[in-house]
Image 1 (cartoon, helix red, strand yellow):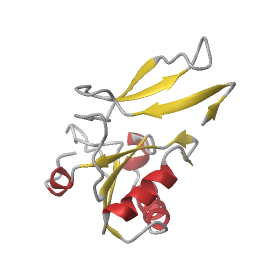
Image 2 (tube, rainbow, N blue to C red; image 1 turned 30 degrees about the vertical axis):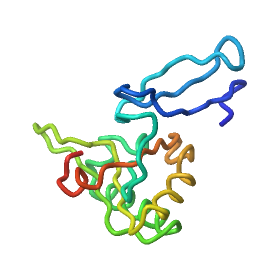
Image 3 (cartoon, one colour; image 1 turned 60 degrees about the vertical axis):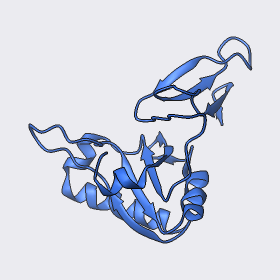
Image 4 (tube, one colour; image 1 turned 180 degrees about the vertical axis):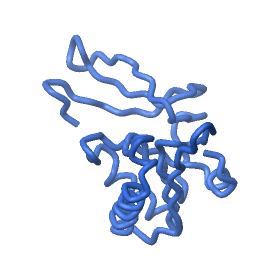
Length: 149
């Protein structure tokens, strides 16, 4: 993806790394600089393909507090994701005053198959939503169903 006069390259983290890595060449066109992306957690060199897609950098806490905005976001995500396959469920954790809610700011979409999820991941990564660039990651279905966001 072109970012100003530089090219943005996204790669998976190295084995044993705790977060995803985004590289961008600041000095020379191909000289990478490491930037940690919160919320991306890989335990191997590649994230395993699953039926659950985690969308990051799409929503803010403030947007999720308002009921009308929340419903509009939910509908937009559902409409867009249905273009790539059948959506089984969507979870968008919302903030609760005085309570730390895990996963706030993330959107989780469960598809009926891994291939549908992969299509959505390939199409949505790098797209813009509310002037923010969408970051995606596959998510563990067991954690998703246990609501461990």
